[in-house]
Image (cartoon, rainbow, N blue to C red; front, side):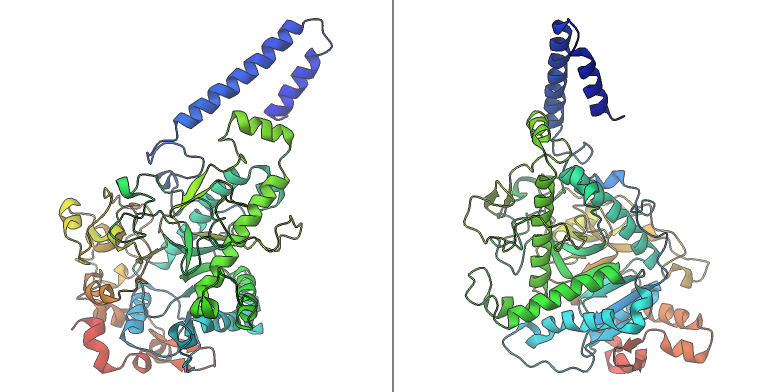
Length: 538
């Protein structure tokens, strides 16, 4: 019997008696208790990393690498890497070198050798092709057997892995479990009744670009779980070193996505369908859409799907709320499933996530649906544990050697941007020595993770698996590459990885890719000798 059912039973037992005073005392005590709990929880809404926050989960309380979602398989049967790219260049070779040293699986590249020349769109149309090209791989009948495997889709030219695949998989499960706790708090009983589950993780962004913040793509997205003083006085203001630098991450970035093949397929199918409708002119004249489908941004379609999902999760929450819930919500506004507190998106106050007071785009389909047609299990990596994107966030980062004092390392970051928070850099517990390329060093003198320079988000206090340099200024891609932990050893480590191959044929495959057209390309095919100085820093 639940606490509430027990209270109902006890109260009913008192009703037929002739002791109304006891009933009044019981009711009074109950209401006073609710009031005290409400005051206590509201007072606990501080800025600390340590206290309980109903819209957040303290990153330090989640043992990364040990927590897994309720419906997660113990380990994926395989991990697949899909990279939309039409041609190679030194930046792509840096991506491939990092993956190979760390021990990631050989990728499949989609869109290979395709030509893009439509000046109306970003990348001359290549950004849109990322959706259709990845979907082609996901829908390939021969890949159906991989439905329960994890697949990672990444951008080609500005993504650097720095931690091993075992860490990525462990964090994937831990992040899903943590997000499900937040969603359960936000949705209350609707969470279990609707069987909501986080499945696919996108990188997190501080802004809802390129979509308009008054659109359904943006305003329904819940408040960030990051501490509300993470950037001091500029937190959630437009007063940081760049316009959006002080905002807490809450929106998505489509340059890094990880999830089960079957769930990724469904997401890309909807994105592809929405893209086709947009290109046909379905949104023509809508003031909340930039011309040419946000100039051909693939991210705009994923933003829209995420916003619609969060809109309908709020619809579900309200659908499963009754009068008694609403009464208790008024007494204890921090109880599971209580309405969201007002918060801002940039400068606009969201007082109602379904119908904010400012002029906004209306949801085209606002009704509750049993079939969950807008539910995709999409979540974002708020704390940048799997992927940190640098747009408006380079000020949060520096390379940290965890065996040395932190202060001097944050005073003058290699990227030249001043850190805008109180830096913290605890060594994570999920990095296992002698893995992720460290085992390739000679045993004598082999480094430990805490002895290496690791790209770190010192505002969140994490070492991301991936650095995604999606800032419009691409200069850091050149200036920061020499700071990666394998610098000075990269060629030696690549050769050592090749030496692990069983035969010459397999050795040639190390560092190469397979294309979606059936070609097999070697490292030498992708990265000719004239690029070696740039890639290996000879």
